[in-house]
Amino acid sequence: MSEEKSLNFIEEIVEADLASGKYKNILTRFPPEPNGYLHMGHAKSICLNFGLAKKYGGQTNLRFDDTNPVTEDTEYVDSIKEDVQWLGFNWAKELYASDYFEQLYGFAVDLIKKDLAYVDDSTSEDIAAQKGTPTQPGVANIYRSRSIQDNLQLFADMRAGKYKDGEKVLRAKIDMASTNMLLRDPIIYRIKHAHHHHTGNAWCIYPMYDFAHGQSDSIENITHSICTLEFIPHKPMYDWCIENLGIFPSKQYEFARLNMTYTVMSKRKLLQLVNDGYVTSWDDPRMPTISAMRRRGFTPESIRAFCDKIGVAKRENLIDFGLLEFCVREHLNKIAKRRMVVFDPLKVTISNYLNEWETLSSENNPEDENGGNRALPFTREIYIEREDFMEVAPKKYFRLAPGQMVRLKSAYIIKCDDFVKDAHGNITEVRCSYLPESKSGNDTSGINVKGTLHWVSAATALPVEVRLYDRLFTEENIGNAEGDFKDYINPNSLQVIAKAYAEPALAEATLADRFQFLRKGYFCLDKDSTANKLVFNRTVTLKDTWAKVNK
Image 1 (cartoon, helix red, strand yellow):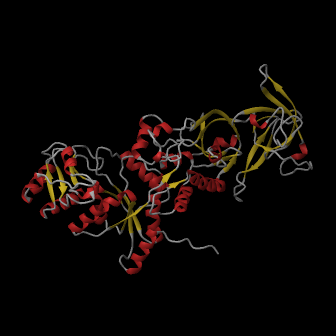
Image 2: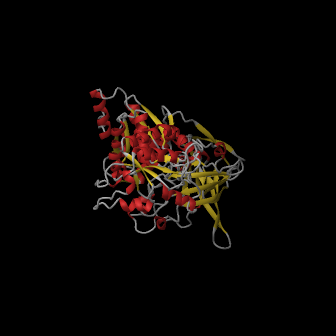
């Protein structure tokens, strides 16, 4: 009997809240800002928020934190929704912080009426200087003592569009001497004359994140507001707003964000990679975005398993990218269809094979008893990998060499009789004979060989492009690396094989299919494919080769 998995610290909090009757049901939320594509760090948050709700019979809202019209776009909204659904989750409500702009404006007015907020005409530079330093208290300016009536009028004028960007801001009146710099009268509204993806031109003032976030949670009656550790300093502001507005007391809990080896998880840095041409797009299969993982062939099941394995911690740590690859291999081994593809073809002629062709049968997946078989054409001329033949073979070399025998996967045993070289000494053809009685599944030859090779029929081979992806960076911990992070980009992160040869069954591949190319790795069809040119992406190698290379 397997041990029951222990609870993480957030699950312990939820269970205690439910047991005490504090909440009848829990309500969580996933609140991304629609200013970029989601990455694996977001995947962890998605799995945590939706997973908690599912485990404890609650619900999760998808709320777009869209308070900055300059950086946000419906393109990102659409991609985020696609990613969440692809990971296997459904939200209770699709909401936007901008849905609450009128309520948030009303909250700000309430703070002004309580003399807890004021309009400041200072420049951003002056405000920063007046805030002091972590060891020196801030200094109040003349605008802090404005009357409530003046502040109400000025704030209304800000909303009416009477001022230019940056001309005035609304600040909360908290404590200019606080040891927490974020409580030194933080800006809660700023002027931005910009078109908003959701509200159009209805507003020219926008709430700051720290003002909008807690109140949005409260408006929705979110019971457990879960975020990453960098928001710990923001928590007092979160609580201050809720307390002074007298609204539903949502509670914030923090967990360690996901940091992975050989990867960056900063939207700003990822945007640099796209804009500077180091990658082709947000969904370039070398990127850590969810859309890139999907395009590369990762499965939602494997990502959920990965997030479950790494758990929920209170301290930052660095997760080995190899663990994610392990989870992917484990799942793909169960579901991937087996196919044969030759990357570097060497022609083999089977001299005593006199048939024009015959149809053999090969299993689609030995791990799936219901996987069935596929037809495999066999002809006199085939292709094998060039590296699978040696003119002079060392001991314990179990592939093809003069006088040596190997089995062709799902076909026959062949023996090398001779080979042909061109004028430059390159081997251009290997000549073999086969044992007719050695057919796979009906072998009466009595001969056992140690080597089995993948192959494709030369007559029916399907030309395909294969893209071999590797890690985007050479440095394990990019966060601690010296200098520009782009200095550590792996120059070998993509190798393109323009013309590999595949068995004809791959002509029927779809974007949803996952394949194991025998002896090569796991692959999927890329969206760049056309009817005349199929392109396959390597998802992951069969084994973890990176660890050995980089020891």
